[in-house]
Length: 370
Image 1 (tube, rainbow, N blue to C red):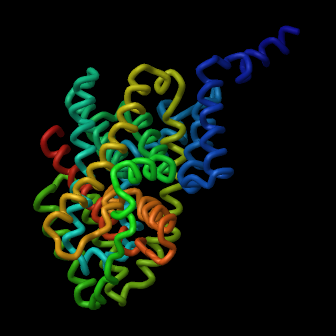
Image 2: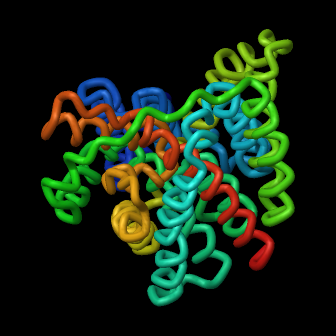
């Protein structure tokens, strides 16, 4: 009996606490959303399973010095994984619609207002300036950027910030349509936009080079993100480095996504994650995402006051950098009112601009607060 009792004491059952159980259920819920609801499964399934792993009592997690998980988590703490993901995103992204209609980059910039609104709100709720900067970036709806900035400004908040950012990215189809419909009239939703002009190969090659030079000069703190994003796009568009582009947009980004999802999920241990601060972060994340969506739509309506050829203001909602889900949401809402109105290619312009905009905003915050 003594031996059995000793064995029992070494098991996770004996060390199980209510907090661990709550987090395991949250992890299972994330997996359910990814599989049953198809909400960002490539993100939510690894994160959900990581949450379960990180909250199994008695295991050696990311906070245990010298453990395997702590070594894998080092890529998050050191800010290595996010730039590699940006490399893959760049190799997958077609900037043609943005090049063809460059004024739409303003919508990507307008949507970043949610970041700075949340920054102010975070300070009001008691977070220090560095923590507020890290939390504010959730408004860009960009998981890798959120992880990158929080790892530099507030490493102790990486878990809650990453989970909040990816959660709201996954819930784009739920959150954005009501806001879009609230802020636009039926007449505005029916606006059709002309097919963008054809973009030359030379323009596609020059864009990442010029884009890198301009954005990194403005926000040198985000050079790792912006540099890898534009480099990934250059190897895609050059036409002579297809093997590199194929590796970046498939095997590399898949491997890094797995490692990032598992380790970020595992970092949400109950004793670290279950706190009033985490609840505040989730509330601020929802607020920032709604503000970003609303300001994108409202700025598009403002632009229409000065444009002869009107733009459909719904595409302003895709100024957040949840690529390509936000653009798809705008397209689907447009299809509800007119099956012949194809907004996807137009919405992709502010959508990819939002990726650039959130990275620039992160660089500005890092330069000021870092």
